[in-house]
Length: 276
View 1 (spheres, rainbow, N blue to C red):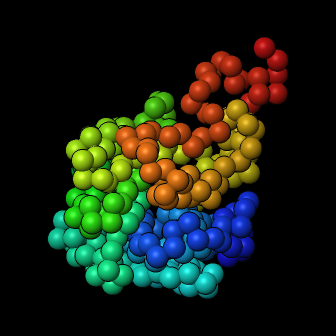
View 2 (cartoon, rainbow, N blue to C red):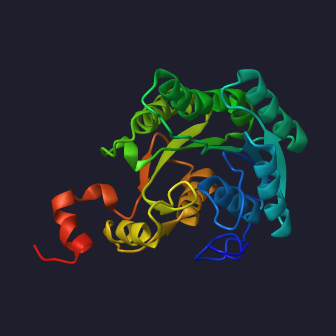
């Protein structure tokens, strides 16, 4: 893979055996071009760590593109297509993966859409994909995850914690965090862990706005002064999906270089280059 990183892992070599013999499903994992989104990066990293990965996307061509990247990198993946608002299609996709490998150990609910245009239809569409879709995938996967002692990783956004004028997107991501804690409570007795990642301003196809100037502003707006990529989210997802996090559930983990821990006033000097 050219562009952001030549192979799985980004700033690190992502190859290993932490998910050996396991099966993972990643939603919204389709891709096109060289710059990976969080779903594609997660699928690539999980496969590089030994998992067979179900690459689920609403677009068959994008799902196949990521599957081919996984195979080129030496991993195993199966391309799956489903509209996450279609309960029957979701169940069939999940069952197909579980039947293909004989198990399902991890689900990463990464898929998300924005684009609330101020209409009721726009609002409903965002919630249908970002919240209801995640719920449908998790419920379809639940019996398989119980057998495997598996885990769910939901992907929220800092838009759920701070005002961005994002409308339905921020509200839906907040709802996804609430869904996380509720499922962690309900499914804990089943041995299924449910956690949530909260990514900040990553350099991804969805987050790439404003060209080079926008990238520089986003870099300077976090506490580390470095640019995050899809691989940073993928590594955090790997931890929550792997055996190292066996005693963690119901957690809401920011992956944002500290963006949400500082106030706008405190960050202005760093962003503008001035002094306090």
